[in-house]
Amino acid sequence: MAHHEISVATIQRLPLYLDYLKSVEKDIEFISATTIAFSLGLGEVQVRKDLASVSSSGKPKIGYNIHELISQLEDALGYHHVNNAIIVGAGKLGCALLGYEGFCRSGLEILAAFDSDQTKAGQYESGKPIYTVDALPDFCRDKEVRIGIITVPGEHAQKVCDLLVEAGILAIWNFAPVRLDIPKNIIVKNENMASSLAVLSTSLAKKLREA
Amino acid sequence: MAHHEISVATIQRLPLYLDYLKSVEKDIEFISATTIAFSLGLGEVQVRKDLASVSSSGKPKIGYNIHELISQLEDALGYHHVNNAIIVGAGKLGCALLGYEGFCRSGLEILAAFDSDQTKAGQYESGKPIYTVDALPDFCRDKEVRIGIITVPGEHAQKVCDLLVEAGILAIWNFAPVRLDIPKNIIVKNENMASSLAVLSTSLAKKLREA
Image (tube, rainbow over all chains, first blue to last red; front, side, top):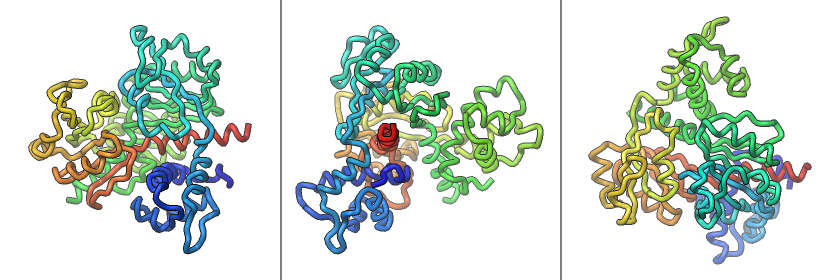
C-alpha cells in the first residue's frame, strides 16, 4: 500500500482501530467495518475509507481477517520498526511521558531522559535513566536516536532543539509552548496544550452563549 | 465577530498569535500580518485569513493596533470568561497539567485534582489541593465546575467520565487512551498521545524509506 498518501486525520485514527482490534483479537477471526464503526462510535463510511488506506483484504459479507488487519495497521504506523527516542527535560511532563502506558506497543522506545539539573542525574524514572544534558550528543550518536522529545520550559526549548539537531536527530516532538526555528529536513510535531485547550474553551464559550 | 464560524485549524493557531503579540506588546504599537507571519514561520495568506476571522481593524500600510488585536484574540478564545476545571487522576500526567505554565493566561482555572488513592488526599501539587473522588460531585456543584480533565488509566476513564457528567460538567478533556461513551450535549476533546505519535512516526518511516 502507498502509506505515504494517508491523510493526517486518518493516521490519527489508526491507533484507535489498532487498540480496539487488539482488545477483541482473542475472541473472533473476522470483523466487519460496521462492527468496528459501531464499537468506536465512528461513521461507517469513514471507517471503510480509513481501513481501505491500509488494507485491501476486506471481503463482502465476511469482513477483515482480524490478525491480518492488525498487522497491516501496525505496518502503516511504522510499529514494526523500533524508533529510539530520548526526552529532554525530566520535569513532571517529561516523567509523565516516560511512564505513559500508550506507547508500549507503538515502536517508540524511550531510552533515557536528560536534564540540566545535575541533582537528577543518575536517578531512574519509570525504569529509565536520567542523565545530564552534556551527555546527550554522544548518547544520541551511540544509540542511533532518531526522535527527540522536548519537555523543557519554553525559554530553553530552542537551545535544546539546536542541540538535538546537532546530535543527528531526525524528528522532534515538541511539548514546549513555543514555535521552534528548525531545519526543513527535520520532522517536527508541536504538541501545544494551549492550542488544544483553545478548541475546547471556544466550543464551551459558544455553548454558553447559545444557552 | 461571528466566533462560532472559525475553523478548528484557525482556533488552534490563535494561541500562537496571542503568545507572540504579548511578547512584543511592550515595544510596538502597530504590527503587520507580514511581520507576524515572518516571526512565527507561517504563510502570510494564512495569517491574514486567521486574523480576519477575529478582527476587522487591520489597516493597509499600518497593520493592527497590537493591544486591540490581543483583546480580540482573547475574546475569540473565551479567555475573558474564567472556566473552572478539575482534574481526575493525580498521577504524573495529572500533576504535570496542574503545573503547566501555558494555561496561566488562558482562562482555565484548575481548582483541584481528585484521585482514588486515599493517601494522596490532603496533599498539594503546584499549589492545588488533591481530594478523594468521593468529594467530586459536591465540589463540582458548589464551585460550578464546567470542565473535567481525565488523566486516569484507560480502564477507569469511562467510570470517571460518567461521574463527571452526573456532576453537571459541560466539557471533558480526555487524556486517557480510550474512546468515551458520552452524551451528545457534552463537549469532548480527546488528547491521545499515541495518535500524535502516529503522525510523527509515519512521517519518519516515510523519510527513512525514501533515504
